[in-house]
Image (cartoon, rainbow, N blue to C red; front, side, top):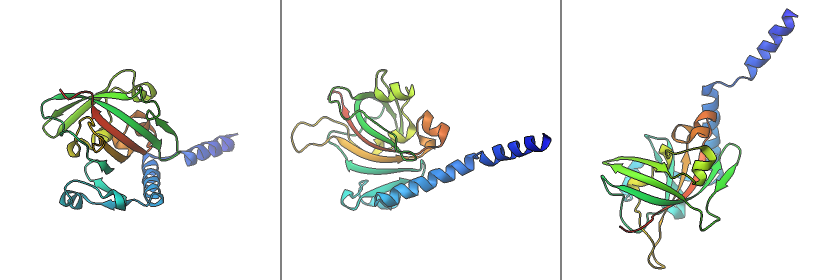
Length: 203
């Protein structure tokens, strides 16, 4: 009986994943996703030298050292950067995919049901919260916007399209668990996002 108990305990321990092992799986999943998606990773120096843009024709993503987020700017966007010292309400549409298991959610299918976020800028710092009733809020009981989703704010404009040549800001992100929402951080899951941002008005 004692031997059986010892064997059961050994098997249980052997099946336990450490945080370090989960992080290694996450890194492997991100590397595989980058390879499968034919993504070209550039560093921040090259990104800044290019005028803080990524070459979409080459499928470039910049790796942001401080956060571990990979970012592609598809459209920098019409309008202006978020104003320092101001609070702005943005309309956000997104597609989210769990890189580990392929689970997806999106609010891009219904034209009348976007998410809204209230963003505050203080110098180089940004904070944001989802308005209750949004898909992100309802899915994850999430009020604060994850740090990773705010990575584009220093580099994009926010406005509203006025003619056929205008584009609202559009980005793609690979967000590691440390910069993600509660599910990402709890399970050590990386997520892929495609997001658009625009102002609710021009005031």
